[in-house]
Image (cartoon, rainbow, N blue to C red; front, side, top):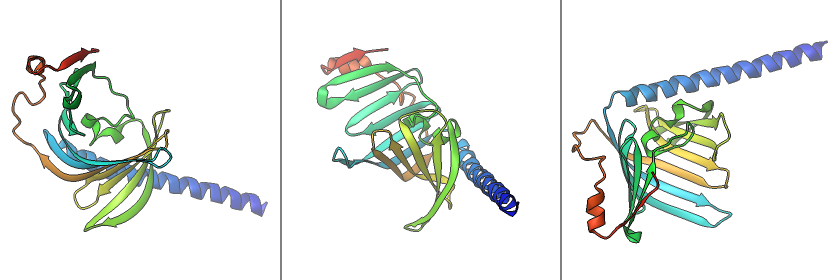
Length: 214
């Protein structure tokens, strides 16, 4: 009888701890969301790192992305990608081609437009480790996708001093680890009206091949 009582207390204790951890995670993520909601647009400079030990793939580069609502302009790996809210234009100078595709977004997909808000839908939360990185206190929250996706889990690192995202580490089903570390934020900029526009004539004049899959 005593063993059953102790087991029941243990189950209740573990469940209560999980609820508290979930609640703590939600409170911190709400602070991050509130911080992001203050801004009409954002420019993020970041470091992108891809590691897959099994395939012996290790890549690292810097990138920038300008985000306004669900629109974005991304520069990464000498490629520019523009999302005007309806279509995505991938401009690859090395191949002299432009690929046009419809803009479709899944809940758990970390796209440039959702880089700062992707965690709001499609995940359950687990309170993870607290680390000191440089002068920053970074609290990590583990995100587990609610549905089957390419990501098996995502670690979201939050700078407790600014309540802004510091780092995103995504583990994939292919055994890859993708890390995006934020180097700087710039918010509420006056953007040129054509920031998210794609000028097809300009690239055709330069001899680019336009692949329209939209």
